[in-house]
Amino acid sequence: MITRLVGRRAGLQGLVWGAVFGLFTYASAVGFAASYRTPQARAVFAAALGSNSGLTMMLGRAHRIDTVAGFTEWRGVGLLALVAGVWGALTGTRLLRGEEEAGRWELLVSGMVTRRRAAVFASAGLGIGWLAMFVMTFAITGLTRSTTQLNVSLGAAGAYAFVLAASAAMFLATGVLASQLARSRRHAAMIAGGVLGASVVLRMLSDSGGSMRWLAWVSPLGWLEKTRPLTGFRPALLLLVAAAVAGQLAIAWWWAGTRDIGAGLLERPDVSVPHLRLLSGPAGLAIRTTRPVALGWCAGLAVLGMLFGLVAKSAAQAAAGSSAFRRTIGELGAVGNGATAYLGITFLVGATLVMMVAAGRVVDVRDEEGTGRVEHLLVRPVSRLTWFVQRMALSLALLVACAEVLALAEWTGASVQHTGVGLGRLLAAGVNVVPVAVAVLGLGALVFGVAPRWTAVVTYGLVAWSFLVDFLAQLVSSLHWMRGTSLLYHMVPAPAAGPHWVSAAGLLGIGTAAAAIGFLAFARRDVLGE
Image (cartoon, rainbow, N blue to C red):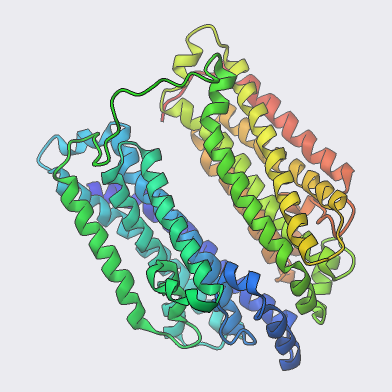
């Protein structure tokens, strides 16, 4: 029963993320083959990007990047392995320590099942999610090899899917282990996230060259980078991942049987000095609870924006000879094909991430209601409308901050490379990102007010749909009719083109109207738990 309960939740997520990984792989292969049709064009691309130190640190070392397989492997293992690791760390801590923190774990271990066996069965459920991710990624990658110029064997496609899933397995096990160490889900997520962050830093340092290449051997992401599933598979390196997964799970299962429910091996003192700053009202409380998430998103977007700016010049040079790149830029409403055009594409990626911030803020509001925390505020004298409006206003401020941090970081990186793109244009491009995120925020508030239990599914689904439709429609002409359903389609890729403020006003209007309806609906309905 425990395995089925955990596996049902993890399996659905694994299928969704496996589909995302497979579609990303398909888009990478199709996009590269269409953009660089000749060996000469691919050689120019490889010379421009393969030797770029900033891009090497971000995605890892490239092998045979002048081929479709090499490019697909470079992007896939460099980006998707990290995403799989994030999913594993968050899912492992949420479905173990999160369930225990909510009090539901006690119901499972109060009968014949021991705490250690419950942890084993829950880990098996997480394994179902891992298997679902692998199968879906493998299925789409296998279809990709027969419909594109990927030109790899079915075994290589399976190896590629397994390497991506191996990252998820590694950090699922880390999440299980962190759940035994911490007393809360947030603390466990911080521990697992810290391990993942250290792996990323070590891998980036090893790819910076020089005397630090040995650091790849102490980073799980470095192990996966060295496997080269599509350009010369090294399966023996996966034994390191298997040993790390088995070791973490063995330690976690042992500790699960030695501690009390609700306790953690890293105990915190029961008495600490109170910190009462910002606790004078619900708005201050919202700022205090949102502050770690806000700082994390701003820091992540700053790093991403800096990397985008640093590679803008070389990326533009690599794409200069690609007619497909110029055609894509034109379809997006941009002009030119230099660094400005490349930065316009990066702001579409940044807009997707800021949309994720908006979706996360709405889901957090729902989480406060579902877990019963909001009832302590709404008993008296805070009204529902005041609480909800304050949370949405704080979320709006966070969206603006994230967009401008991204813009400022991109300008910093681009100015180092002397691209000639001014600060004012990039700050305006940051403002241009906000309306599409406000639309997500407002529509999420509407769903929260009308059908709160569907908040996470609908809000995150809207972001995923907008990104995938807009991305795939640029590669598959038969899907162009669907682009109008994507929120990103209605956003101009500034600074490659001047912001279209009429479209921006329309998105703001949609978000504001939807949020107003959500406010009224929430004020009239009952508070609903999970």
